[in-house]
Amino acid sequence: MAPIAVGDVVPEGSISFFDENDQLQTVSVHSLAAGKKVILFGVPGAFTPTCSGDLGFDSKLMNLVDLCFVFPWISMKHVPGFIEKAEELKSKGVDEIICFSVNDPFVMKAWGKTYPENKHVKFVADGSGEYTKLLGLELDLKDKGLGVRSRRFALLLDNLKVTVANVESGGEFTVSSADDILKAL
Image (tube, rainbow, N blue to C red; front, top):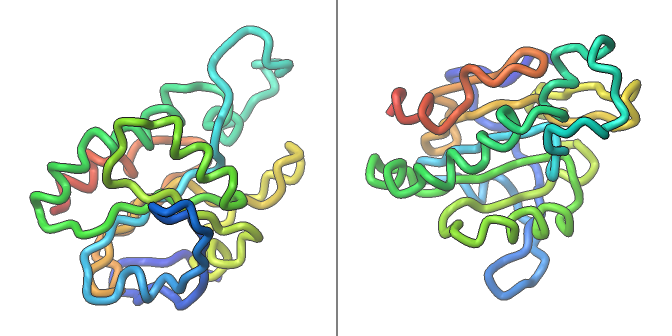
């Protein structure tokens, strides 16, 4: 399936998250995004390891995909960038900012709690990767023991229609930051 692109309407599908009352919710993406301007940004995984010498990887064997799981300047800037820029994004008309990953909702809840300064980014789970597949944004990391994950991306939706589709290649982090979305607004 071709990846989601500018001009496409996001497919209907379900995602899960814990609400402000700590209740597990499974909702349709359309119910979250209909009639709104929404940023949906995806990451390959929560709690990616920090850059330390004891990760057990041979750096000579790493490819670009591995980089997003090993070097914090990639994974540790994506989410904090959206948290730090949330007020600015909202001042430009963004209604919702959603962090998306192929993880279970308990992991996403725990990950979200590691950002106590966060007031605006909702951490949502695509537990089985079904919605990721509907978006055409799968990243096969089975050979790394990580299963099928989501590619790193940032979509800007306006009433369900994709107006910006910044999808990364491999383990890069060059087009999907909060600053990239701000430039597009």
